[in-house]
Image (cartoon, rainbow, N blue to C red):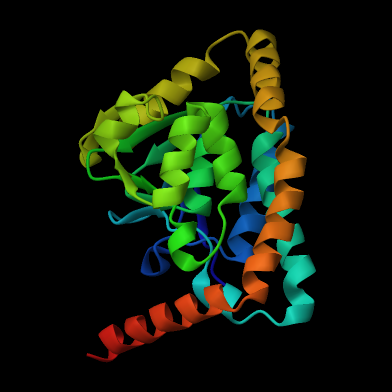
Length: 257
């Protein structure tokens, strides 16, 4: 099976490219596991000083969970599926070298959360963040937790409840993005910035990141547990299934037409 993750190097920087452009780089179980495995290997490799995360193609950084995968889950597969998400988020939140997100297109749901778990975000002018779980009939518990840390409770509440898109320039203005660049300059700038951070004294850099990870991770386990409980309650109503079925039907019609 071909890998859904492309890995390249620029000096001591490793570039991880989510390579499922036909699925808007959505995170299926295999891709989540491969990202987690790569980060674990980079953690113990002194030749790796920083990581850049980006997506293949021009449309998406990451569209979040793979809807075809989640729609096909049997009830008894729910716990193992949630465990794979926990491992994925743990891999990001425990990595103690700089992670730079080069957000080249839409970052939605878990894609948005992936960017929020990175240390610094650079965005293409055409990129946007979306936390639209509410429109799918699901609560955005983990996304809301991360947004609260980055932005405070008032703005996080507004973003979660509306499910609206956050364009790149707004993301920069409110502090979610460091830079906004033309798409053809984004990756080069992200790699250059990753190299700049990677050249810092490594122990001090690691200790700073560990502390920031601790702050970001505070309450993360509780948010994960709450996410399981609240999403289970939502699923029990049948509302998310109806929304997803309607979405998949519309997508099938578009493809057929």
